[in-house]
Each structure stands twice: as structure tokens, then as C-alpha cells.
Amino acid sequence: MFLEIITPDENVFAGEVDHATFPGSEGSFQVLNDHAAMVSSLGTGDLKIVSTHNKKTEEIHMAIDGGVVEILNNKVLVLAEHIEK
Picture (spheres, rainbow, N blue to C red):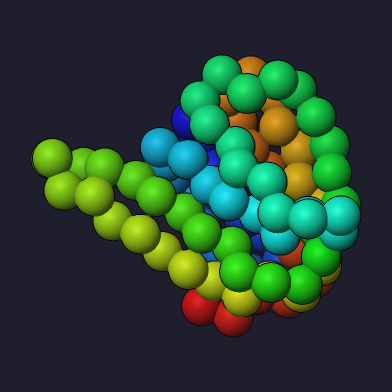
């Protein structure tokens, strides 16, 4: 699935990922390929991205401070207030 993370200041991330775990405002949740369409508010916490390229798995962690996430047709769009890489 394709993940794009945007803040008011910059485009933070864009690329294919295996799955991502988000800090929802009511608790964390994970998004996998073919996830049902949804929109959710995000709280403060750890955003974890996992992707595999050439049989090598990479895990990226970012601290996120609120925002929203939209999931539709294997595209995940995160509009974040602030992110620390």
C-alpha cells in the first residue's frame, strides 16, 4: 500500500509500505494492505512504518503529535500537525 505523510511544513514520507501502526486518539491501530476505507483522528505517540525491499525489512519510527489519517483503496494519507523523525 502507498503511505503519504504531510505536515503544514513539509512532505515527510511517501512510499510503498507493508503496514503501519498509528496512535489513534482512542488507542493505537494497525493498517495493512486492503484495509477497509476509514478516517480517524490521531493522538500523540509513536508512528511505526514497516516496509520490505529486496528481502530486507526496514522499520521507521516517528513521533506524531495529532492529526488525521484517511485510508482508501490501498492509499493511506496522514495529515499531521507535527512529526519528529
